[in-house]
Image (tube, rainbow, N blue to C red):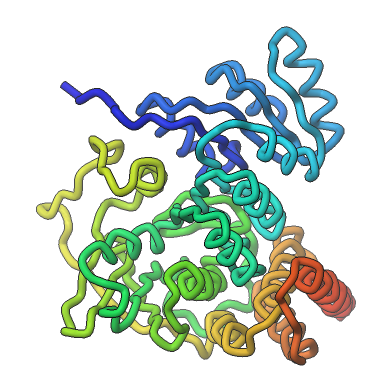
Length: 393
């Protein structure tokens, strides 16, 4: 018989209709967490169902037309409806929930992250772009508010757990594992004709379209290197990426005595959500156990950064510092959107991002959000110009 949960929390789930968001709600349902608020872009039907299921006090829609429709749908409830991107920020700040789980995709998740910290909430972070775009600002704010940021990404959740085995000053390197995506082993010429539906067929994880494409280009792993550097206070030169095709080892930490601590489990994001809500305590499993009788092998390989150049470009941007990671992210968001709408080809994503970074690779300060967002806007304009030129070719 399952033991009684003694540490249920009150939570907000941002991006609650996406892959991580829906899994977070599944964990909340299983463990008795009180879901006080949810948010989405425009999926009215799903949000209505979630509000009714969990008895949410509030919900927010980034799309204002969707928010208007939702007000009608939920008129028989007491739920407060917030509208627009500013409405999501207001909802977070006004809620008395203990934890905000941010699984919004892309740069759109940055201001919700800032709002969660400013309002004194513990942050369970699945929006890696918050740290890619504004890592210095976000980490400084968390320190100022004396708040923990608990990672929900599988790799960073794994590292967080592995760090329990030693002291921070004993870390030699962090080892981030990567599945390699659906095109592992292919050359650039073999990637020329890749269609969106091919790139969306990830071999292991069931994720949203944007993250799946980032995984296929290895941009996602580049973002994770930047995120790990900020989260764990480790220089990017002490972070290594290793391809682990089976996605059983989720990441590792090597200590100064050359011992390596790894976290293994079946690939299921619900474990990461569960641990972010319970750490340092562990609760009874919400995922399947790892069956070593069925696990025939674990394989490792170096990532191909000559073909998948965006991993190397991400590290380059982190070394340049300032707002260059924000430039990288903005260009990537433009390029991936253009690919998914079939305006450019798969390898054009590499070229668009690289060209944008190269054009804007002057010293860019990132001490304030205004400086970061100015670089973000400039990068989007440059990247859009590159996309439009590529479309005419």
